[in-house]
Length: 217
Image 1 (spheres, rainbow, N blue to C red):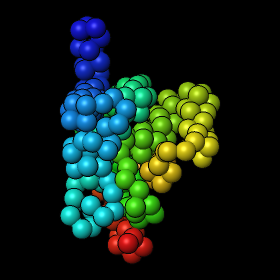
Image 2: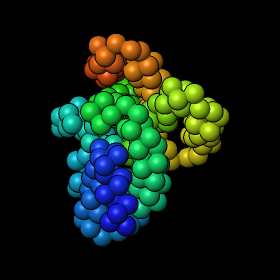
Image 3: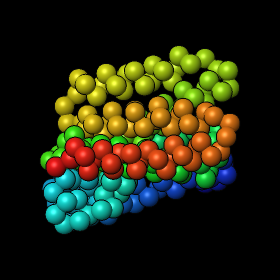
């Protein structure tokens, strides 16, 4: 295990650190809630970190469009998302480099969080799924740049989109926001000019915030 962690850290340190942060924060929330399955309703940390329209507007929890992506609602939610993050994040980080990967992850998380506020204002939401949807799209870009078969990452995206529409209790706009963010970011980082990379990374959450101010509650 120790050897695996060292190897993983050398190749994808940000992915490992983000995963570790999510696990630690969830453990704290579970201890507060004294539960593995009802963390949402009984943890102050969850309430502080989740994205929710009234908290964002009334109590000025301005940080929540980012922090919600580091909090999960139960052990199953955490486990599935962290496995996906480890598998997908490692490939994306190795391809783009740690600095760009972190920027892409944060941009996608904030953008999907703001879309939740815009289109599902009253839905309290937490989880890395929005950022993970963006990473799935970016994984297609990674495969394409390598000249690899695109079927596997494409099927992964399609299956998760279908899952979003047929399953209750998931954040529709968080998932679709991450999907849309991933498409925009992939188009930007697919260009050779680094300036275009950063225009997309910085411009996307700004555009999402402007949409929120125009259409939000």
